[in-house]
Length: 293
Length: 280
Image (cartoon, rainbow over all chains, first blue to last red; front, side):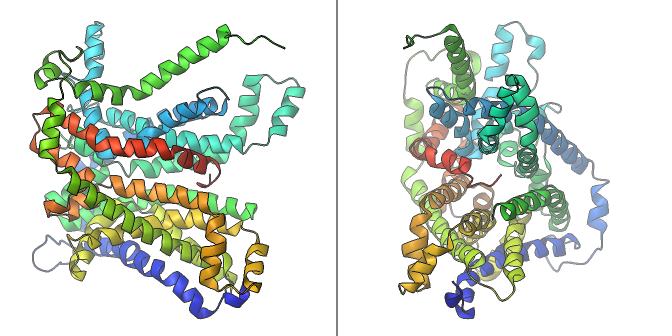
């Protein structure tokens, strides 16, 4: 391989990726940081205002609501998804007729456009004529027929449920690949020692999947920062911005109210939160690859 | 030999499984049911079955949406962006994983640099890329979407390609080089054929992302003749917000080709992921 590794060959191989990556990923981050220190509003020149945009976040009631909603969605999704996708993976790992079909069904929502998922779930969670509340009312459980979307209280829970449905198969598949990577002789040894199915699950499978659990958690964290279409379709952030997430509030601030400086400060805040979440993912993945090499 | 019969345990298992599958499919099934009802029925008797099986809603969606131009626009973006993002990232990943650098650290640093993108939510990039596009003069054009789409996939593809290329046995390429292969022939004739499953998995993930992409498309595209699938779904809902059954029928029609595509190719997605294509 050394013979072909001329400087020219390497440059040709790397340059296209590097240029596009630099212009459309790295430079934009600095552009965002630059604008976050200005009061740019689309007209005239951008004036530097120091850290004013950042201090403003802490006094902005709508930002704090969006932040709180994001945290609620994150916690609810993490709980639903870790439990749900792990159970799905255990089931996928059992061999039975129809296993492939089952996997296909669980994974399917992941490939549907989020914008359409938002539209469809809007009809299920609509407080008046949606499926969930209609069923609850017909069972006489009117107390449980809450304002899933459109109210001020329950939208983050509704978003977490829909998000869970959307990415359940993705996370289950990651768990499944973790489960399949556990060497079979460990289970054999346990069975010989007389461990039952539950003991094998709690003393072998779950401890051996520690890294997979961490990766799934990190992917859930970064995933929640990508939820936008669901908010846009299901609640529009309303009423009165009470159901915004950080991403949708940022979008509103930038593209609807055209406060570019402040919007970019929110964007940078999202970036920092996401980097904290993802850094560990990259570290784990690269460590694993090295140990495999 | 044991007699083959359905045991009670097996039956309970399958009943439970069927219930679970039904639960997961309810949103889709419900949407299909709604698409045959009238607006009046949806609002006033939500749980009833449609009175008559009418295709009016589909007819309305067909009349309003220009499916031809919508699929053309979307597929053009998908094919061009996926092709270039895969070609470019394969080249750079090959350099990182297989070519010799004077300092090993250089290729490692390049690798980590290209992975940073995983941590950057694309929403952070929306406005800056909007500015960059308008600076270059490609805002609102197809190129103005294709370039960011290529860029957004770089980190993910690098992670998968490099992971696979590092595990490739060196003897393969040594033999090819001794036989007189140059770099281009080595990649296209020797390495890529071995990597077919990895390529299929990456193609699907890239293509699905671009097909479904909404925020970039909705922010950058002004000219409605360039509308993509996601944009059309959202626009239909915006314009006919009171036509509930029409919205559902339109959404289903927009979703259908993708689901068919998925059913055909799903074994590569799930198989590719469990084979360790997505490390983790």
